[in-house]
Image 1: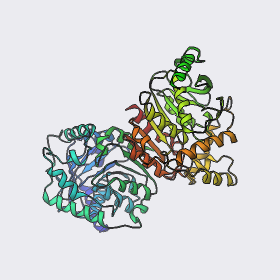
Image 2: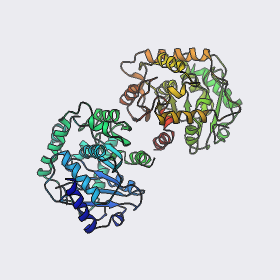
Image 3: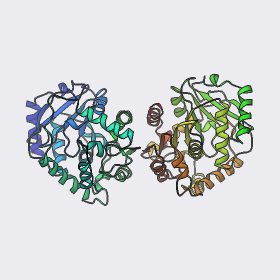
Image 4: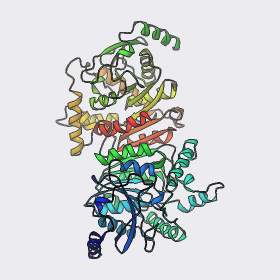
Length: 301
Length: 301
């Protein structure tokens, strides 16, 4: 596999559509052009923002999420001072290939994608399912992964309420987008933040990713359920992570419960924990300014 | 009591040594002049820093701590953008009166002191024992207390290991100041941070507070032990706190354990939790820059 990646890397380096140095011209996720790069047999779609210098921050997305599901308030704020890359995993959005149905495959693919971009060292922001991939990447590739933000996520074997909360979310009347209910608290402040988030993620009008359908939901659901129900009683993945880690979630994360974030904090050697009040799975979007302030400090020092 | 405070307030307002507006001239704790103001029958010693505008941040000190025990790196950083006040509680340092041996008295005194300074609205930073006073002030005086930082502290009935950890700290060889062991982790980074902290708190050479002796340790010890061993099973104090609260401590707070900070976070309605890695009771001093960055954002928004 490693040889295969290397040969792909060679191809990617030689024929990549966009030079890494040129990829970071955009300053807004809403208008950043979709670009493509080949790695691991997949043509990955991605968008790059921010300056050309500094350690790139690579975003790893949640269950069924495309690049359009990232909050421009978070992505653009980071991109003011560092290169930022969002991308679609195998089979998601404008990335081709068969959707990955396990975290190991997603990890291999994310690694190949980052390598293809020519980056020698990156920071990661893994949200939810993307947080599992971030943990695996950090544990397996200390030479590549510099610092890690784990948002709204949990450890292997940490359990999930995916089916329960998805059923609840979709069964609600007048809820066209389940994220307002799953990601945000239902206080006045939480509802307002949820509406603002949805307005931001729908601000991009051109060149949006195709919406995720049942095939993606099934594969990602399988990956998520298997990873969260496979015990890791000795926390081997967490104890392998030596990089500085920032763990963030809401006080009422119903999808991957808040206790799982506390466990991440306790078993990762060098982890800071930030838990927000009055918030759920999407606390980093609800408190985007506060989160970016803390996260930028964490990444810069 | 309220009438008594009012008449003292009148006296303080009329005859106070320093006008509130003039009190915030200094920019360094190391050289800020010690000032005095009468309140509640006590002549309080205090030091004021920072600009004259903005919500003042009042520091509430730990077990046996004087003004000289505050970290200039923290105090001065806050004072760049807001008025900051440190003071000695009754019978401590240059403040006269009999040392208070209970949290209720400390709370009454702190309230009278803040009122005497003429402040209508303040933020609090309560560290350890000072965090108990901060909780009581916030719960009892919502009209006065705007936002609260609770550092290295716990809830009423939260338990303490004071005797155990003090004995351990004082029984160590080559440990002239127990704070290097109690406040800081014993990793290389923690030891370095501890040495730097001690260097900072001893930077003030003139007009230092008298050191605290056995009388203060006994009274503060009694206050601390009674408060942490008196159960509050319904968390009445915590649920009475409606202000935004930032709870901060280290992952290995041995004096007032880290779990107590998680409980504060869980039972205060609007609380954000920050737990640092590789740190003990004094995490806000070990990670002073990161802490001030997060705390300033919290106070400003």
